[in-house]
Image 1 (cartoon, rainbow, N blue to C red):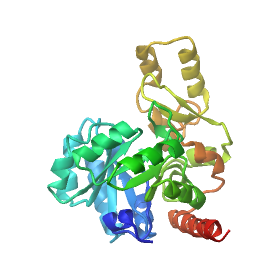
Image 2 (cartoon, rainbow, N blue to C red; image 1 turned 135 degrees about the horizontal axis):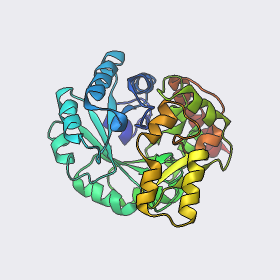
Image 3 (cartoon, one colour; image 1 turned 120 degrees about the vertical axis):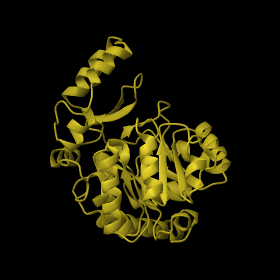
Image 4 (cartoon, rainbow, N blue to C red; image 1 turned 45 degrees about the horizontal axis):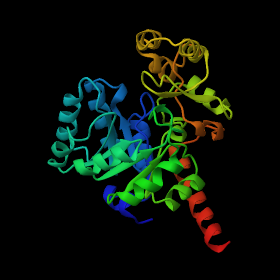
Length: 313
């Protein structure tokens, strides 16, 4: 396939793996890149020395382009930016903050920059800041999310119509048919999180992966919207949060309930009771743990088959 996203990143297929905390290490990123997509290392759960190790390991595991995802609220973000420049990482996806702060710096080092947004307003601001593309993420997505609760199919059309730079769709995309639907609305690539989180190369705990495979329709919910909106599978921790929110708990109390390392406990350590089980709505469609290469190939096969069916009737 050839379009602006494939050309921008020099990749075969316009499929990007999300830079997910506790899931997206060098093994997953390199596997997606080797399969023809674009793999991302998720820096949000890594100390700088760990991040450096993953970047260097990824460079050894693939000769294809790969990138990193940097949450801009990360406390040591300047150190991560130094590593990115020193290691000549070619592509950076930024999220959870203003793209104005680092876009010019990164582009001055010939690094491609992509910003994740959940609204048209911030898509336009990101374009003005000089990013090369944007990820438009609907609230079906897992992990931290936009408070607006705009679905992916409602988010993509106005952004694709008003932006000059290419748009990557995210949120609720785990199949080739979903990818085709987003392309029909104006997207030129897809960022896939949940489906790649539940792959053999993901660094998530097996307990987490199996819990997602077992999940059904309606088992996830967007919660903690007054603090930091996040989509979770319902468990004992979620029930505590829901009870506190129902009685009007303050942000301070919610922050105390959330505590620290909650996502690590759920995703990386496999605590299914007291950890955050962050995953998207598409989890109900995931029924097995496959390799990243299988996911990429199956998505592209389904995309092409569905496209031909639409064209030929």
